Structure formats: structure tokens, C-alpha cells
Length: 478
Image 1: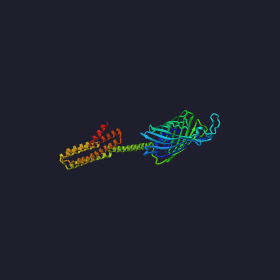
Image 2: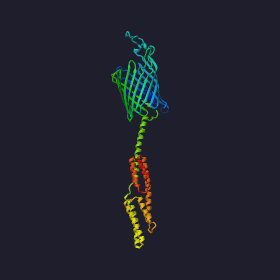
Image 3: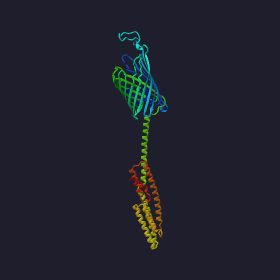
Image 4: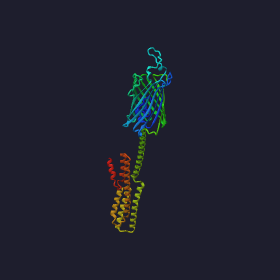
């Protein structure tokens, strides 16, 4: 990734790039890499860079931080070697800030060859036949260094990081002189993507001159476990590179390859070739970001499902309410009319019998009036009179003829039938209001509520049922 890794490094290689990242290790890991620098140099030199590290979380789910040990070496076999042995600790603060530090023991060793064992006199230019004075007493030096690191998550997607290497700038001179290990500062910004990241890092240090570099990189992972990386960097002192890489990971291990190709400076080589292997132990925890995305997806699916069920329930309740508040069917109206006609026919039959038996004129007159009253009732029923009006008509007829010689059993029978009808209407009204209340709970719109209340009121307005509940609800909506 073009060395732009400090902000989001979250594996065992945090021991090298940024000690704060060791906090993000979720289970024990061992990692190692081998780099061949500037492969194909004309003098056949083999410059190697190696790393070996182990890191693990501390406490349950890493609540006590993370710890690791590492070994790093830069070597030209037989001639020169730099090595570092480090112990690292990192911890999270306030769920967004990671801090870490590495204490290192540094060593430098210069080998022996024809040039170091037979020094050249700088004045005469002739071989002295004795070792280089600089290496006469010792050819190696050790010291201690300190690295500090920080990672800060600005949001779920963005993070910044900073790493200070060799903060104390230890003096690694072999003999009286000044050869301090340079203090290196790296500041990086990263954006996490659903399946990868974008990263940028600025690095600076001072040796004989001040060096500055800017590196950018990106990686993406595929569902089959393969990953691709690309990056590059540029800076002063003829520094310019391109880098490419590929990875394959499974639950317990990961294999990585990278090539860093110089565009300036050292030429005529195959660049730096690097291969690394990571082994993880224990059960893999669910990544917090992935877990959150899964939870959000599940909640979204649950909400959509509940919304569909709620809509289906509203539609069902609305259909039932509409059925209850439907106007009387043609069959219902015909049944009422037939009942009224039957009552009238029975009275007319009684009148015919009375006429045949030459009843008293007073009785005949009452029977005629009774017949006319039921004829009027029958006409109004056919016209669609309400149940309240039907009851009023029947009670008026009964009041007029109940203490006479007229048989009013027909009217009493109609009143009983009407009472049954009114009881059914009351139950239907209560059920309609129950459906309405459930629709309100399901989130029915104001317009739908007004429409349903209007149907209920119109349906039961003349049925003798107390509809004040529906009327009060309608007033509240207005």
C-alpha cells in the first residue's frame, strides 16, 4: 500500500508500522516477512529486510490492551547488519483513541572483508596492512530506542494515525563520533471502505539532510479471500516508487506478496520483492464494523417486513370494516320488504274474514284503519326507512290498536324482529369501532380514518345505535 499504513494497521505488523495498532488485534497472531531490496543489483549484492513478530490481546476481548514482541533486521550478509528487538504495548481510550509504545534494543554490526582488514591510508592511498582504525576496537554497537504511536477514529469510516520512531535518537556510533539513529515521524489519514481502504501518509526524518515523503495506497478484498493492493510515493532525494501487491487469506492464515519498483534513484533492478505470512490462533471474532452493518441490514429487513405485515393487516381490517359498513344488500332489503308485505297480507286476510262474517261496523272500521296503517308502514319500508323510523311507526300502530278488538300480534312480531335487528346492528357497530381503533394503531392516515368514520356514521346513524363515539372521533380529527 505504498507504506501508507499507520492509521489503520490492525494486525501483528503494527509492531513495525505503528505500536498503537496492536490494540486492534482480536486474537493471537504470528507474522513474518522477507524482503529482497533492489533485486538484481549489478554487483549481485543481496540486501535483505526481515521481520518476525508475535502479538495478542490482553484481557477479555482485549479490554486490557494488546501486547507483542518483534524482531526486525536489515542486512547485507557478511558486511553489515542492523537489528531491532522490541516489546510493544497498546491500549484503547474512550473507544476512539489508541495509544501505543515500543521499547527496542538496537544493534549494528559491521562484518569483515578485504577492505576492513586492510585499511587504506587516506593521504598516500596505499594499503596499510592493518584493520580499519574505526573497527580496531569494536565492529558493533547497541543501544535502546523508543517508538510511540497513535490512532484516532474520527468516524466509522475515517481514521488518522501518527507514529514516532526512535524518539530518543539513540547514538549508534562505533567509536567517538556522532551517528544518531534518525527520529522518523509519520502522519497518515485513512478512509475505510466496505471491502477495503484508501490511505495517505506523510513521513519525514533528518539525517545528513531533511527527508520528506508522501505515500498513497489502496486495497480491496473480494469475497473469495483474494485481495489486491496498489500504491506509490514520492519525495526529495530522487525518491519515487510504485507498488503492487496481492493477498490471499483464510480464517487461520494469510499470505501476501508485494513489489515496490523505484522510478528514480537506483535503476536497472527488479525493485523490492516482499513476501509475508501471517498465522492467527483461536476463533475469529466478528469485525465491529461488519457486525454493525449486519445489524443495520437485519433491522432494515425487519422494519420492511413489519411494514409489509402492518400494511397487510391494515388492508384486512379495512376490508372487514368496509364489509360491516356496506349498505344493505338487495337480498336484505327484499327480506325486509317481504316481512312487511307478509304482515300486510295477514291483516288483509283478517279483514276479508271479518267482512264475510258481517262483523260489527265498528270492528270493520278499526280493521280498515289497522290495514291502512300497515299499508303505510309497508310503503315506507319499501322506500328504505331507517330502523328507528320503523320502530316509531310500529309503536304508533301498537299504541293505537292494542286496547281494541284488533289482533296486534303481527305488530308485536315485527317489533321483536326489529329488536333482533337492532341488537345485531349494535354488535356490528362495536366491531366496526374495534376495527377502526386497530387501524389507528397500525398507523392509518388521517384521510383513511375520516373515510372509515364517515362510513360507520352513515351506516348506523338511523339504526337506533348510540354512535356518539364515532361522531366525537370525527370531530377530533377535524
